[in-house]
Image (tube, rainbow, N blue to C red; front, side):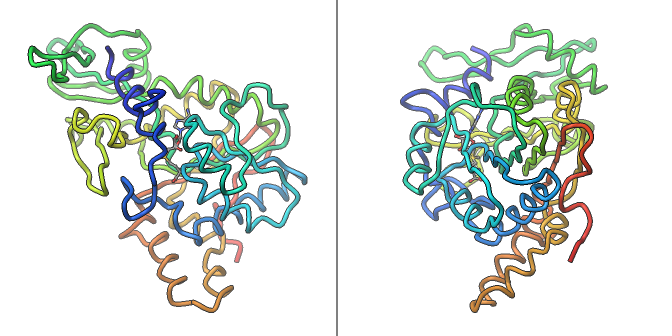
Length: 334
Ligand SMILES: C[S@@+](CC[C@H](N)C(=O)[O-])C[C@H]1O[C@@H](n2cnc3c(N)ncnc32)[C@H](O)[C@@H]1O
């Protein structure tokens, strides 16, 4: 099978998939830490949604993508003061159940939703979309890395011809040349995923927070083994065949591809900024002033905005439907 199909099964298989089993994302015993566990993050994102709502006019619909345990959704919506409907779009039934326990309304597909004024927000969702793995060969050729079983019945990698011509096209469009042995992960899921979003956001903003970079950096020789990695009990590991279904698997997001695919769907880029600068511009410091426990609140804020921590680990990529002003949080307003 392609690595894309293997990753899809490892994460989303109906019984054994990592996300299907509703992992305790964000808890100390969970697989990894996310922004979503910090109340200050919910506060910051709520400011962005409120600013977007002032442009769109209320009431608005807020769609959170991939809501995890529902921690961010319940925190974020508690900070929203504008009239709104809050929906979590989540593919994992186990996580949908956790989100519902926190009082969130969830959907497993966006199909059937009316197009309306909407702000979509997704923290670390693009990085969970399954990727193909390709590798450079001699003579400017590339092959795809498939997953097979060896004679002992263990997973192994197997090179083969490309399963989809779009893989080659993507690299050509991005002017990426992979030297011999250079591995790259390519996500073709972006097209249907963004298509589904753009069909219901009319008008509105789509905001992604994730780790990634432009194609020329992600596919540079610095990452000649690709950026695929796994998280297992708070440890980062580099073996996709270890503890399959128990570990999260992810790759850096190719922001150039996201921008190109969004543009093809008629969405304009409304901003690209580091998480630290974005939250600072949105006035996250007011979160500290709004409570008595200012010391622990300041610690949360520092963790989220500092360049040496999550502030530069994540970027914010925003899209808008044509005719709207640029996205919230690009310039300081406090
Ligand atoms: C890395 S987790 C992030 C969870 C949460 N946003 C957070 O920051 O803690 C990825 C989330 O996206 C969900 N997900 C993955 N693919 C999805 C898709 N195509 N549509 C909607 N949700 C998806 C997963 O089930 C999971 O909830």
